Image (cartoon, rainbow, N blue to C red; front, side):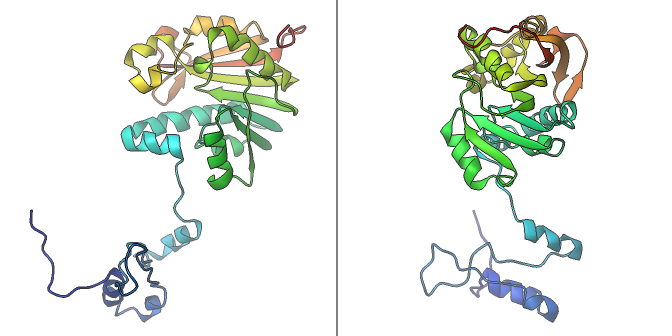
Amino acid sequence: LFQFSGAESLSFHAYALSRYADRPDLLTRIRPVRDPAAGDGALYNSLRTELPTEEAQYEDLKGVGAQALGLMTGYAYATNPKRLAFTLSRYKFVAKMLTGKTSVLEIGCADAFGTPLVLQEVGALTAADFDWMFVREAQASHPFRDRITFLRHDMVEGPLAGVFDGAFCLDVLEHIAPEAESRFVLNVCESLTDDGVFVVGIPSLESQVYASEISKAGHVNCKTGEELRAFMLKFFSNVFLFSMNDEVVHTGFTPMAHYLFAIGAGKRPGLAAPGG
């Protein structure tokens, strides 16, 4: 293995100054950042040296800066990048189904990477998860933390105080033990207005032969399309079922779907109180 270089030791900062020597208008915008791991006498050698863009229209990007993906999404990006396309497509579908809702609740938000897509279409958004690790990360560093209310809540334990006319959960119900699933949805219903809408997205039972080991480890309650419809009809007078393959949502044959959506609308009267 050979590394070719010049005889002179040159920092990134010094290189940047020489590279743009003929652009005095840019020289003042090249700001050196010392490598924090280097000693006091070290050269300015950090890769964070800010260079001007080659095309002026991209200068505005620096005002926003690089955004973190979050723990779960970062892992997906590093190990299976195409999964991000599927995740965002699911959130976009939910966003379109809940467009115009005044106050929406997400149950099981994890790192809330796709949640801002829903925020674009609704009045207010609360994102809850039962895992403090995700909630604290989102509260501390999520790019939309000033517009999304993040909180820790376990929907199996009880309803969430508030008045929501829409709610959704993606990749959550399959993690709820069968003996707790009715309590989970009853608590969702308790958190919804009478005309509220609940959108559920889960991987299909048929898809599990292709699931990764890390996915299957937590999937204790996958369903077929008809099982999901029948389950949701216990709580809602109207249930609309959709299939999904990769990033495409459709009304096709559910046994061939990799992912399922069920939309419940119109809570059934006389639902038993949780625990009743």
